[in-house]
Amino acid sequence: MKVQCLQVGPIGTNCYLLCDEENKVCAVVDPGDEAARIALAVRRSGCTPRVVLLTHGHYDHTGGVAGLRREYPGMAVYLNREDTPGAGAPEMLFPTVPDTLHYAEGDTVQVGGLTVKVLHTPGHSKGSVSLLCGDVLFSGDTLFAGDCGRTDLWGGDMEQMLHSLGRLGLLDGDLTVCPGHMETSSLELERKRNPWLRQGMRMLRP
Ligand SMILES: [Zn+2]
Image 1 (spheres, protein in one colour):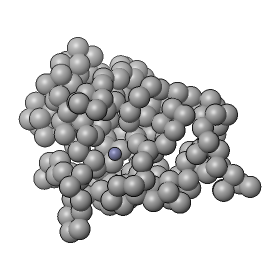
Image 2 (tube, rainbow, N blue to C red):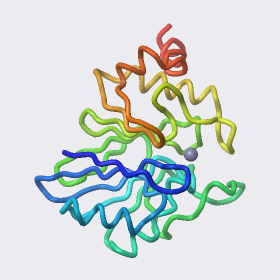
Image 3 (cartoon, rainbow, N blue to C red):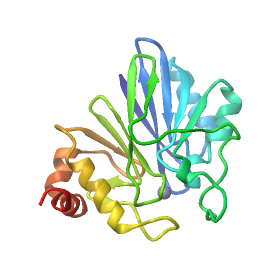
Image 4 (cartoon, rainbow, N blue to C red):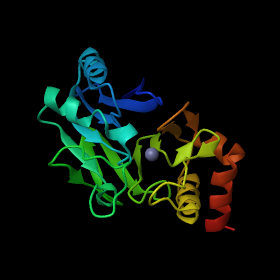
């Protein structure tokens, strides 16, 4: 298993290639923009992309989906249903591709020999998920290095955010945290220094 990060788009969204090098397949997490550049990185990885996994529906995480799918028509695209654009949905949720599949709490997605587990972690948006694969946590805009995502956008909720962060903090062991923006971290470091994560953990386990 190998993880590669590309920062894409005007506000530097972290797009990740999650590669099963043995089986030569990969997942693309949050192709937010610059589909051609992502496709180039995929080709260089030597892996065939099987799935796009979206941590949530905001345009800066989904903007490259359609372009990437034109390159790789066989790819399935997954998003939590609650971040699907529709009635009452805000301008931040853009349609991705018409046949987007939905995943939810407890679901798993297979990427070759890798199993990705879906944790529903609302707070930044209603349909935000975190994705756990081995000892790597793709935390989207829920958990950042030293911080957490905004909760003032449509569907955001601070109470839910703290609950979601607490849940992540209480996961077993140490994990590499790959967030949707800015630098990577480790769960152990965040348990020590992240005030929001700590507050969430206290809420769940006083
Ligand atoms: Zn977002």
